[in-house]
Structure formats: structure tokens, C-alpha cells
Image 1 (cartoon, rainbow, N blue to C red):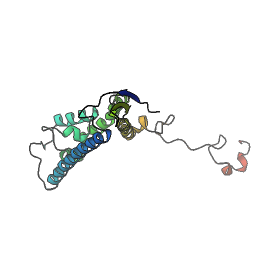
Image 2 (cartoon, helix red, strand yellow):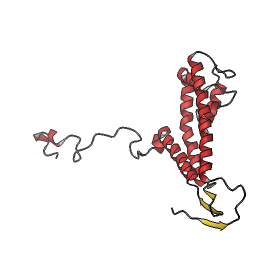
Image 3 (cartoon, rainbow, N blue to C red):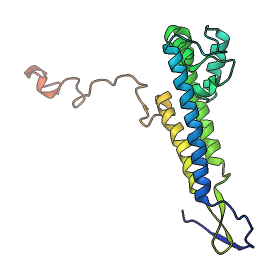
Length: 212
């Protein structure tokens, strides 16, 4: 799609506007800081789990109430990290231990991840319909303001959609997979027939010639 530009003469402000490159750099910097902080937190939890320690203030004993809240968050479309990122919730390593040790919770969690595919479908619709920040204003050297397509936002939206589609295909392959089964409902198809026969032509004996 061709990029449309709209030029409007305007007196250049004393401070000017932040350039597109500077804004992108600042966003990348903030994102890197958040990811670095999350990585440190996860590593600390893993280390404590390996050393037999518990995360202060976090529950470690399994309760059905906590299991229901975790699975409700997963089914609503949140990640595991997003669900347990609350003080009253167990650490992520604790939840993984519960999944290993509790068959009923593991089955409940599996159902929740399948239901999350439906939440992702709703997310995709919202992301596709949201045109917020699809365009941005930049200031030229001549003191003009120009409205341009914000490629970074659009590409980011595409990535969010494609990521959800990729996960949906694996959560519910029968419904959202690339290969749709229209005939066998996931069951094995019968052996191929040869000219309407259930055996290969070379297996037919002399007495079976009339049947051919």
C-alpha cells in the first residue's frame, strides 16, 4: 500500500518534536530494561527452587482455589507469567511443580490452554480493528509537519497477530491448524482401493477373474 503524505506548513516550535528514530530508540530501551528485570526475577526464582528455598510471601501449598484462579487467567488469554505476577499467587516454579505432581490440576490446566485459543481469536479481531497510532506526525528540516504511516506500530501489530495464530494452531490443531480434516475426524483412513477391489491386482488368482 502506497504511503500517503500530508504536508501542512507550521511554525517550528522552540523544542521541536521528537524524531521517529529517537522515539523508537527510547521504546526499545524501555523494553530492554523491562525484559532484563523479568529475566533477573525468573532466574532468582529458579535458583531458589533448585536450592530448596521458597519465594518470600508466595504460597507453596496447592489449593483448588488458587488452581481455579490460575486456570481462569490462562483461559482468558494471559500468559503464566502474567497470571502469577501478583503477590497472593504462587511463584511460577511452584505452579510447574504442581503440574508435575497433580494429575487433576494438569488436566484442568490443559483445558484452560485450549480455551485460551478462543481468547486469542478475540484478541486478533481487536488488534486488526485498532487503528490507533497507525500514523504519526514528524517534523521536517524545513519546519513542516508531515503525517506518515507508522510502520513500527503496524509491523508490531502483525507480529502480535501472527504469534497468536501460531499458538492457536498448536493449542487447537483440529480447529485452527493449517491442515483441516474434513472427512476422517482425526481417525486413520481405510486402506486405498484398487479399481474398487480391496486387494492389489497382482494378488487376484485365476479363479477370481470373473469378479474382475
